[in-house]
Length: 241
Image (cartoon, rainbow, N blue to C red; front, side, top):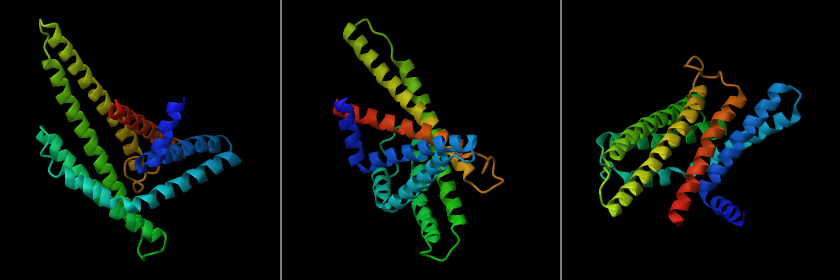
């Protein structure tokens, strides 16, 4: 119990960890608030939770004003993905980084327009930023699918040996590869949930844009957020071991 509390506190002390917690609370509040508001139009708790969710969303948008440089540093360190063995994975990652890098200034302009700091329509900038986010998600899904196929081939190439020591090493390699496959599969599920919301926030007439009720948006976001929290927790545990 104490270790769990300490892990949670450590997560809150990091920017990425705090953002994931706020994101989970944001979508979780929208899920519960949407369900309550849908059951009863007079539900004050449901309306309060939806308002709370909206404020957390504004909070995350404001905090992302400072993400450009960290994203640029990551993109620069990755470069053209020279460390990647597969060319398809490499170029999907590069294109995803470009989409992510362009996303931030577009969202900043939309935010500034809504705050009346600049005189321009925010709608087209919100649409552009959402389109870039969706593009990045699609590339991430395709990259994960490609990675899973590569990892599965590696699992199949691991052959049994008469040596007990080598058999143990091969078993450990297979276990590690299967963990990577599960991680990529969860990543696909998370990106699909986010992509469904990204389409919902596109202009009306585009696929199912604008058709999701608040609780469904909250559900998709909560699924994605919980997966993100689990992956972050697993990565921290692996780093400590």
